[in-house]
Structures are given as C-alpha cells and as structure tokens.
Length: 395
Image 1 (cartoon, rainbow, N blue to C red):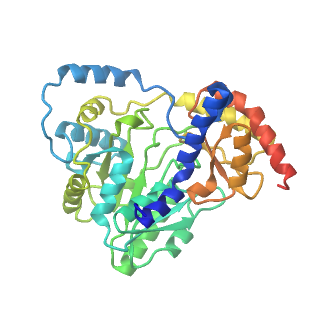
Image 2: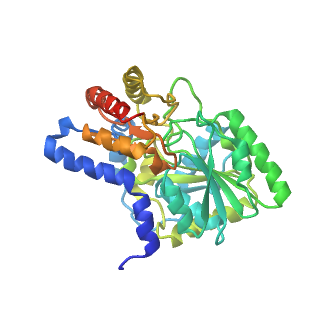
Image 3: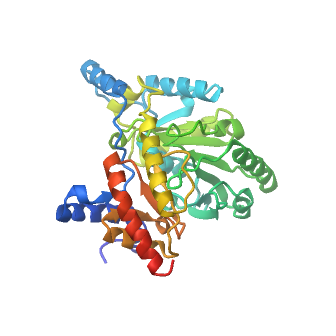
C-alpha cells in the first residue's frame, strides 16, 4: 500500500460529488454536452458583478509591489472587511479580529488547528458538507453529527445530547449546503442559550462556528440571522466564492466576535496557524480587489428564477422537497428508500445528481441548480422518467 489507509478510506467517503462530476465529463463526450444534465457540482454559473472586473483591472494596473505581507492579510483589506461587518452586525468589529484566508475551507482548517486538542469534538448537523469530517480530522479532532428536525431546522435538544466534556465547538452552515435551509433567529437564540448553560455546567468554552459562504444568496426576503448578536464565543468563516462568483480565486476570511473569551490570543493563534498550515496568507491580488468591492454580490434573482423553475417542474412530477430559502441547491426526497440506487436511475437518464448519503442523510439527493436555464428545462422530462421508473421498483 503506497498511501495511508485512513486517506484511502476518506477518499472513498468523499468521492460522490467528484465521481458524479467525472461521470458527467464521460457522458458529455459520449452523448454531447447538450444531452447531459449535470447538477453534480456547486460551481456558480452567474457572472461576477461588473464592479469586480473593474476593480480587478484597476488593481492589476496600479500594483507595483509584490512582497511579503502580514500573515493575517493586508491591513487595508482587513479594515475594509471590518468596516463592512461593523455595519452588517451593528457591532464594532476591529480589523484586528479579521484574518484573510484561502477561502472558507482554508478558514475552517485554520480555526480547527487553533482550537483542537487531540480527540476534542466538533458537533455539526446532518446533512452537512462532507469535507467537514476531514477538516476536523486534519487537526486531530472528532466530528460528531446531530440530527435535524424534518424541515431541516435545528434540533437544539439533539445537539445538546451530543455535548460532552470533550466538545470544543458547534459548526453550523446557513444557508445550508445541501438543503438551502436558513436557520432562524429563534433557533440561533435557543442554541446560544443552551450553549451558555452547557459552558457553565462543564466549566469550559464551547465555540459556535458559522460557515457562511452563501449568506447573501437568499430568497423571498429571508434574512440570515447574525450569530454575533446571539453568542459571544462565536466565529464566522466565509468566502467570496459563491456570493461574488469567484470560487477559483480562493479568497475568504475569519471574523472573531470582539467579546470572545481571550479574543486577542485567539486571533494570534489563527494568524500563526494560517502560516504553519502552509496557507501562509490569502492570495495577495484578490485581497486587494475584494477590499474595493465589499457588499457587491451576484444577481441573486438569477438563482431565484432557477430555483422556482426547478421547484415547479419537480413538484408537478410528484417529488417531495422543502423549498430552499438560500444557496443554490435542492434536496428532494428520493422516491425510493435507496438514494444511491435512485441517483443511478437518474444517471441512466443522463441526469447527474449526488445522493444524500454523501451528506450524511440517506433517502434524499442533491441538485445543484447553478446551471443555465436550458439545462433545467430540458432535464424535467428526464426527472419524470426516472421518477416513474423508481415507482415501478416499489417506491
């Protein structure tokens, strides 16, 4: 064996999204791209705002120095982010509490590296982004998974059941990938109240980490609640990948509540871990660019149109699902119990989705609707054929 057994096992667990994406490439070569309906990968297809391109051109033209920077990022970028967050949160966020990172994935690894002792536990809720398990393991921690309510809202009692003396953090993702659920202010307030109680009982700090790369992609006047308002020992990790449609640029940040316990030492640990993990610092050019375009987002109405188009088509067929409040994913219930089998039936119709098992929740499947409208419209008859075929199997 040439690779670690654990990594080989992890590779098999994480393969669903990548596998379906790669299967899509093969099918497109065989049948033509126009005859394959690929909803496997959450790769934004709405163009970045025009202000981004303008800022990018300006930055390239005016930048002459390309030396090392502070590992937390350029001060002017951190100041721009902090100013934006201060307005958003109605709470003074100092630039010193912002660390620029290589996207939200880099940010989570930095946070876990900073807080986890061997075998410390992080609790998340299912369904969840599959790589959370690997990020926690990267830093010698253990991921525990609590269930949600049927409508995918937080089940505070279930989260509380999983808390032990080894619990270091609760990790939530809202709007959620894969469900599109936005956790309500009431849910967050209840979660915060429970965490304050458990901190006192156990005499230990429990962090609340909110992974928010979709926080501006919301529909129907839904607002993503502010975790800083709910809980002081909280950390936000996010990126510009989805809200500004620049995932390939790998630019994001960590923001730390100004009243977090030992905040100064905590931020110092983040900066140190950013360096020693090998990220060193976030991409220099993109730091300079995003500093100029805070609060600029893609045209969310484009995603809403796609969501509504899909919801109408699948509902008429008979699929069951909760209408997403944000992000660009649908998470319907599979018409048969075996979600993997149903995804295979869809694949026979040249429709590529991802089984819910890949997100820790069997019996469902994920559709990434960040694709062109024509792909959605042309796929609906194929979803119908797959649905009918599944019912013949005894759904």
